[in-house]
Every structure is written in C-alpha cells, then in structure tokens.
Image 1 (cartoon, one colour):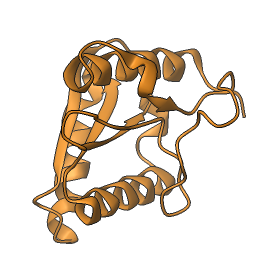
Image 2 (cartoon, helix red, strand yellow; image 1 turned 180 degrees about the vertical axis):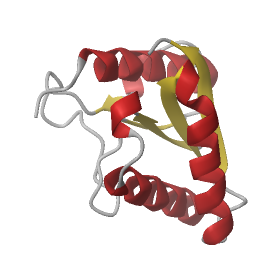
Image 3 (cartoon, helix red, strand yellow; image 1 turned 180 degrees about the horizontal axis):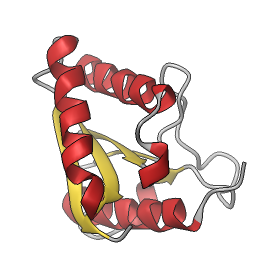
Length: 136
C-alpha cells in the first residue's frame, strides 16, 4: 500500500527532528523506511516491525527509533503491537529513545497510548519523545 502524503510529511519532520536533536543537524546517518529508500538504507526490522527511522547517535551510542503515525493509522492493533515492540526493544538496548511523530491533535491520544503500554508492561523507564506541533 502506498504511503499517504500525511505519513510522508510526518516521516520527513521526524528525520529532521532526529537530525537536529541527536546528530548535530546532519541526517545522513539516519536509516529510514520509504518507498524511495535505496537498498541497505532502510532500518532493520524489530520484532517483525520496521520503524520509520533508525539511528545510533555517534556521540554517545544512543539508539533512536522513530515512528510516524497519521491520524487514521493510530488507533489499531498493529500500531499498539508496533509501539510495544519498539518500547521493549528500547528497554533491552538501554540507551535508547522512541521518537514519535503525530499531528498536533493526536498528541494527547498518542501520549495516553504510550503511557498505558509502559505501565502495563513495566516499561516506565523507556524514554519517549513525542514531537509536537506537527501538521495533520
């Protein structure tokens, strides 16, 4: 199924945010999942799910997993299972953060979903960053 324009925009914002926050503004090292990505440049699958962005920051070895969700792709079993897989992987890695890009009006729902999963599965220590003020 082709990516929606909304999802593509969110992934682009996600990559730019990761580059700014963790890579000194250079997105060259970010692996990202896209129909236009070249072979060997897509993130590795994690528990059967491929994140939209993946990078290990060179300055401190911090793993950054990134996932973008459009409003109509947020409330479903696939997304919940995906978030849980990524949160669990971040806990296993130790020095990791899960970065989520959602439209501004989906931030409260996304935050509640993540908090529920963290509490239910003992993943409270996992760092999660929800990128705010993104278009929908």
